[in-house]
Amino acid sequence: MISSLLEGNKRFVSTIFEQEKEYFADLSKLQRPTVLWIGCSDSRVPVNTITQTKPGEVFVHRNVGNIVATNDWNLSAVLEFTINHLHIPDIVICGHYNCGAINALLNESPDDRYIPIWLNSAYKAMERVDDKLRTLRMQIPDLQRRRLIEEENVRLQLEHLIEYPFVRKAMQSGKLSIHGWMYEMETGEIMVMQKNEMDCRSNFD
Ligand SMILES: [Zn+2]
Figure: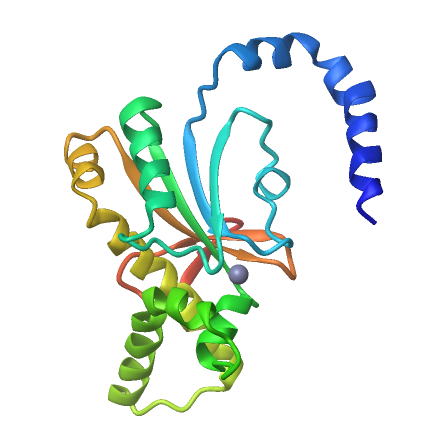
């Protein structure tokens, strides 16, 4: 019920906000986040909860499928603001397993108008995984294929990120690093993506 959100806000004001009044007073004057988080809008991947971060620490952009599309003015403005004005040192693209967007990519619905257009920017991830499996003559279960595509999608979106000239420039001057992560909602763990490999490494190894 929607009223539970407003009830939750009352509890927040009377407990956390009250206990950390000074922190929130400072924060109201200036934000200094050190990470830009590009994640999926999925309600099960809430950045501050899964990374145990506080308000003010992470600048957040979420969309269906954690996609970086260079014709997306929304994300473009977020990147320009966080890199050129907030001078953010790190960007994380965090994908997740059991992603509805990737599921929609694999099982396109004839009724959807906008979702397929949006997912065009992730299509290459599916192609790359399928090409690789074909080359290796590997047959794998559907679930495993989907997980590989979910991971490849993060790599693809990291590539899209570098297509922005000001992102590339900030990286070349050593002011910006970009990272690919995957969130496993069944365990709550974040995996750190390995470059140029078809697997992920657990943060807990
Ligand atoms: Zn998702």
